[in-house]
Image (cartoon, rainbow, N blue to C red; front, side):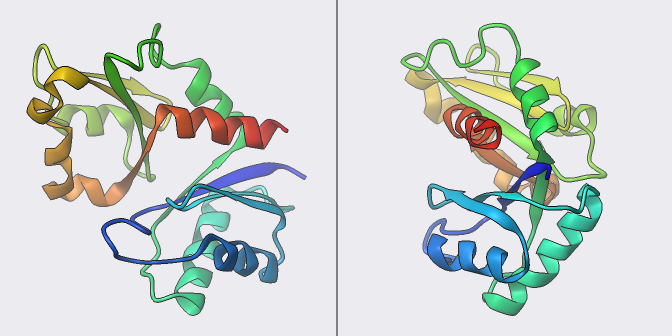
Length: 180
């Protein structure tokens, strides 16, 4: 069976949308998904499914979560192949200097495309860098000037509702889990 990851948007952040990972795993298993595993508390669910259509999987997951939790679900689903592409197509050197930069991957919910997201995403010269990718955009910010980064402004923008953010370490770990 193909493997997928569901990236739940906005759970266990700031005391809102609190969902225990054990309950989240159980919810996926009760709905017939196989090989369910979660990673950290931010809503990353790796699973197997006979269904191959990502739009159908997304709709199914977004329908099942409100029935089990007090959560207006917004989910980005990616296949193992798509996650491999996200990691392989990262800009050269992305993630290579974790002592100097914070690295994030902003996963876009279709129909949002990376060029449109990138065009509306503010970046501060000398602090932030942003690159377009396959269904994502990559964002790094200088740690020593992180308070000047414009990434935090995205939460007030309407486009933010169409994406979910994972740091580079989480992104690569999820790929490892998918490929295990």
